[in-house]
Image 1 (cartoon, rainbow, N blue to C red):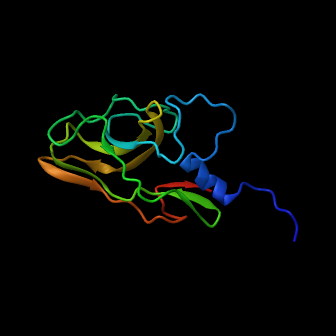
Image 2: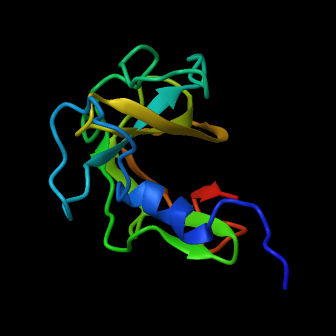
Image 3: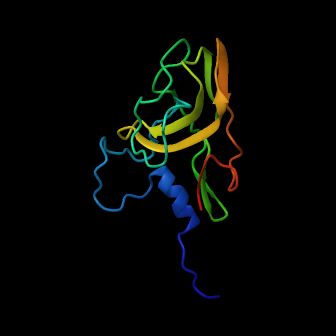
Length: 155
């Protein structure tokens, strides 16, 4: 059997777990081994322009804090650690993102995931069909935690 070059699958998952720190790093606050960061999910108006080039969460284009919605979003439930499925590092929150008893301040079509423990660094943007809520509940159901559908995948 010949050697094969490539990034180890376990390493991809360990990146999501914060296992590896190459170099002295400049994270503020400093990490505590075994303690996951706090991820949050915030909703953004259809008229906003959030994207993969954004590096830090901010409230520009976020829904206004009304009723059951608070700017900054909800805390992401992370009972299942990132893992590897075949050659793909995967992460899926273990609970849906849900907001109850709120009226949206306009049509919205995106949720931004960000790390509130590490200076609000933006993790990802996920879009869906435009929604408007009037005194109701809005939930984003999480996909299956596997290599083809996990919320975050590193292949």
